[in-house]
Every structure is written in C-alpha cells, then in structure tokens.
Length: 229
Image 1: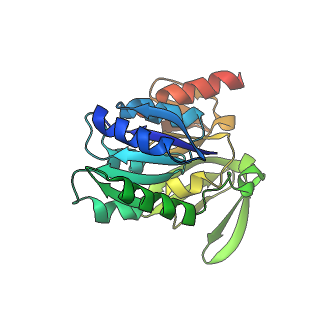
Image 2: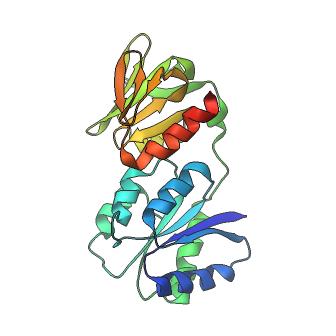
C-alpha cells in the first residue's frame, strides 16, 4: 500500500482529494489535515510515501515544508497559483496540480507517481556507514563517527571525530542515507542523537559544539532523546 497524506487548509480541497484517493486501490490515506505543523510532526514519526501539499497556507506554507522536510516522500503540489512551479521542481516534486483539480488531471499525476517507482526505504539506510563522494572520490564514513551535519549554501559540512568533509549535497537527500539515530534539529542541521551529551530548549551539545534546535523540530528531538535514556 502507498501511504498518502493530504495537507491543505481548504476543507473542500481536502474532501475532493480524499474522494479521488479513495478511488485508487493501493492508496491508504494516513493523514488529512489543514494544519501544516501537524503534518511536520506526523511525518517525523510515521511513514508517508506520497503527499498532496498545498502551497498557500497560514503559519507554514508548502514551500517552507518542502525546504524543511526531513523525510523524502514523493510530493504533488496543489495550489490555485502557478508562480511557484519552477522553484518547486528544484525539490523533486512529482507534479504540480492547479485548483480546482479535475479527476482526469489527478489521475495523470498518479501515473507520474507510478512511473517514479515509490519504494521501501533504501537498504543503504540500514548500513553502518555513509557512502559519499569527496573531492570526486567515493569514500565511506562510519555513522558512529559522525557528530553532526551542517548545511552551508549549496554544500554540506559533515563533522566527524577526526575531520570535516565538505560535499555538494542537500540535507533532504542525505537524510535518506542516514540511520535512524540522525535527526534534523534545525533547517540547517542534522545531529547524531547517539552523540548528544546535553540537551536544552535551544540546542543539543555534541563534542562541545552547541547544535541549534529550532521550535519546528524541538518536540521530536526531545522525544527521541527521551526514548534513548
């Protein structure tokens, strides 16, 4: 089954998408909400394969969710506005549906999802090391040695016990390669929770480095740290 989430602050739009999704045999609707923060919290703890995501929402819009997504579900954007289409494809969205959404157009988007081959989590996420390219050469870094990862423009800084690696990658993409011990704490940081020695409301301490914790990720970070105690 393909697990579906619908995130749209318009009740009518959600009801239309719910009806359309009910017509697809292998779709399982696991969340339908008008609250983007509810979705952000939900996806931290639950598997979602495909998200129908509205762009124009209060508090946190769809583009903000795309930029902060720690998991990597497929995304179909739904909106009454077309000006975000170009930027949205930078995040690898499957399709861009303009409201009001017709069933025929919905089905076309679903066919694109099928073509993109939604799959189970990648097997390399279960390995004990991160495989990357550094200075054009393939290398592996043991997960246990990684302290935290910081976004730096179009690059990532991977801080380990022995050195820092600078690679061309995004936080969203590298998340799919990491083990469950790694958690997004901030729009620019991923922390290895196994290496946290202290946690406060605004940061976690890893090897004398204060890794910031933002309000968006605070709840899930502390929940995961509590489980590890």
